[in-house]
Length: 72
Image 1 (tube, rainbow, N blue to C red):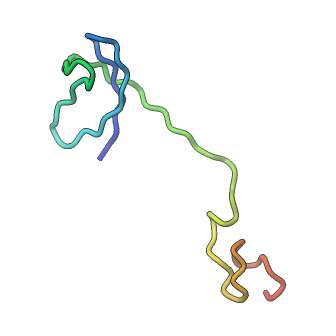
Image 2: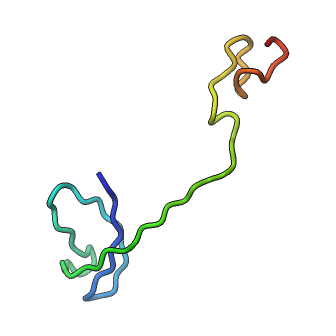
């Protein structure tokens, strides 16, 4: 289900909504269907957290992942 961003032409309300199939979104503030779809931006993190990239070490259980302990 894609999330789209809109600006209402009637009340200038900015909002996001999930649009399913051929459903027509409407402004949650004034209920108008006169909307302008906005270009959505998304965030990307360039940092790598060891605990997020790997599971625990299979030898010792270290949460930093395989290769983080002296048992390897």
